Image (cartoon, rainbow, N blue to C red; front, side, top):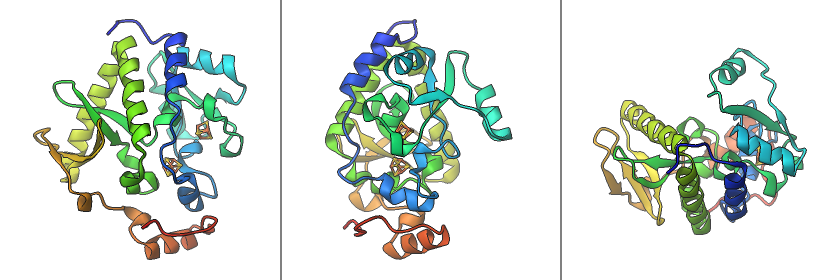
Length: 246
Ligand code: SF4
Ligand code: SF4
């Protein structure tokens, strides 16, 4: 690991190798009907992409689809104000104009972050828990592709190798996950770095295999009935060719 920040070339190398689709399903088709027709992670009202300055330089070199994010309320102003000095918030032109090769690392990885144990081992993919009620993918961890998991792991290993600050940031964030799930009184669901499902016992940090039955859909995605009702409440329309995954 180095003490420097990841360079433009580091991000370019990571982008070139982190291209796998997250699932054979187009997950945005499932969450968009609950979010005014836009995929949840592609709207800054729900998720604001944060990049390091060198990642921003790379994006500006490759495309004009990104611009600096303009805060629109008290919360978004606070998010921007709290950013580390080496980071900035940006926004794209929206899902209809998405250029896959020019997505940020955050876009490629969402809804997952690299989970690190107390001793600092990168053991798998945990998800951003605040999106449990909106992100369909979080409710269908079994539909995450193996290639995606492998590329995710390689991408973050490469990032950590080039940038010790990122490694420390995710170590701290993983500790926050343990504290949060400890309050929730439930284990942290995890996709192992070699695949398979696990649970982290938040008080002890112990990692145990999780039976498939414990990886259950959440919130509006629990059943076809709850999903249909949530779409109706949101005034949305069901995905084209709607068929409940089974
Ligand atoms: S990752 Fe989650 S929030 Fe983003 S498009 Fe897929 S289901 Fe929606
Ligand atoms: S670049 Fe694509 S994946 Fe990323 S936020 Fe924009 S539309 Fe979504």
